[in-house]
Length: 109
Length: 112
Image 1 (cartoon, one colour):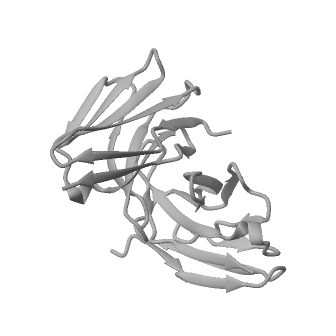
Image 2: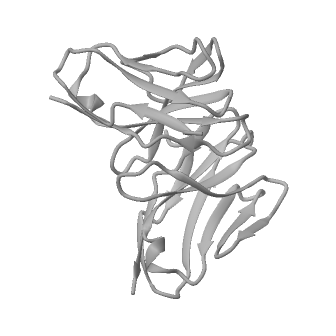
């Protein structure tokens, strides 16, 4: 079964809006939580990552919020741009990296 | 510095044929993994390795073999191809456990 549950499956946002993707996990042994961005025909690329001793990490327009007690984490894309249209995967790692099912984000101009 | 190189990029196999997907990295990374990507299912781990000579199974290992004789190379062997193995295969590497993976560009495999 999938060790990381991701929602929504897809979302549409207007240019300048905020995209929010949520993930949940069960395995408390996970100690590294990356997000990947994938464009059609390409391999996933690391976007941003967080460790469980930090509740929030921001890099440019991308922010991860992490709630260790709830075993949940989320990606916020601020000021969404058409170039952000892609599939986003959350993941969780100990010695193996497990992925969520992915969220397709479409940013309308 | 080429990163993670996968060959071939595309392959069509007949049911029952065998083949090897090649993966090489030039970053001296200890960890390497193979994933398959199917629509709506994200990336599922097939096999992984934490160093030369050490491999282990992931979520979906059946029908696949791996070996890791060098740090650089991590080939994936399909023993007897089945239509259910039609997928996009990604190889990835990272220096240690708590770092992000660098992915190759993928191999699109069709089994007919």
